[in-house]
Length: 344
Image 1: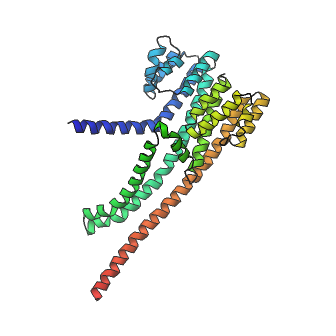
Image 2: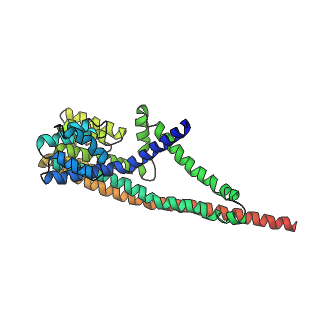
Image 3: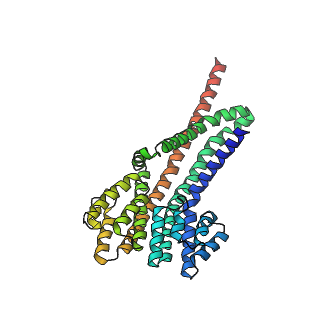
């Protein structure tokens, strides 16, 4: 009984983790987008959250917030009390929006931020589905005749070794990632992530820079002081190596350098972003220039994702071709071996 309960609890935990991975950004994007629409329509914050709760899409988010907002607390305070459900970036942005009176506009920026993250995740995962199906089909279909000519045991003997290899590699990658996710090893993990071949490392680097810039744009538009905005936005990059380099540039800003000059030596920000910073400083429209930089980098990410999703199927095709070829060669080798035995 105890073992069954433990097994069920563990499976529920894994299921919840998978669902959260896939839906967290989507739910937050929906929450901020809908809140922005209702606030612009003149609906009070508490009433807007109450309406969202009725839609059931973001009930986990709205339920916790509503208990505080209905007592007269600010939305940013309510977000602080939700046990890490909201990042420092979100709390600071909402708090600044409450003080400045442009809460709806900043919620739109947060919605765009989470939509961008969800879009990259969706494109990568959905693009991998077809190659994954193809790979599984290539292993199972050639083995189906064994069910009729030999036995179920022979069928499983044929398909299990490649599946054990594939899922073994996947499980090994998962274990390595979990091991390196410990706080003392996060920098090593993130450094390895940036060096992943086949364009993945470059993609993760660009996504990290986009996350930093989007966070910086949100906070800057909200009126958060530039030094504090840089520090918070560095954490939003999601990569300790990128964060460390951004904080190094932030110290140069603290010493009196302009943002463009401080980030000119940053190894992760492309020249385009530095040019946008410089134009923003000269024109006084830094938030607009940051948005433009994000747009340009997002186009690069889209192109990189498309390139990766073109390369992965080709690699899978080659693996499938090699696997099928090995089966055909094995079949004819056994066939000719039997003929030789008969002739002897």
